[in-house]
View 1 (cartoon, rainbow, N blue to C red):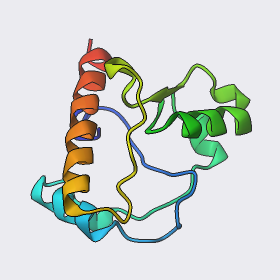
View 2 (cartoon, one colour; view 1 turned 180 degrees about the horizontal axis):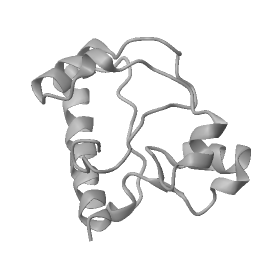
View 3 (cartoon, helix red, strand yellow; view 1 turned 135 degrees about the vertical axis):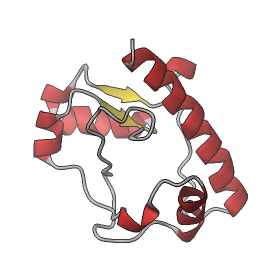
View 4 (cartoon, one colour; view 1 turned 30 degrees about the horizontal axis):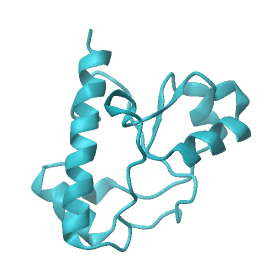
Length: 122
């Protein structure tokens, strides 16, 4: 998303992240191939200040959206599925999956990111 919208402030966080851990090797290989600078990525948890500061919070699964909106009611209306413009289906977490699964998920993420870029750029 940061590459798609260079003028925007883009950050990454999880709701079940192992804080401080490095990117999965399969994801890092894809990120390196795509020039996405995986060296700088460190897992971290979503924090209250992030929810306050960001106008848009994108998640991969409906359960994540529900969790954030329950925990941070002020986020309602700002939390969307990354796949929102493609029907709103959950995007699987490839954690501990095969390299092929990571490739498949990366393609989905890229397609969904392109949709958001188009809508946010207008």
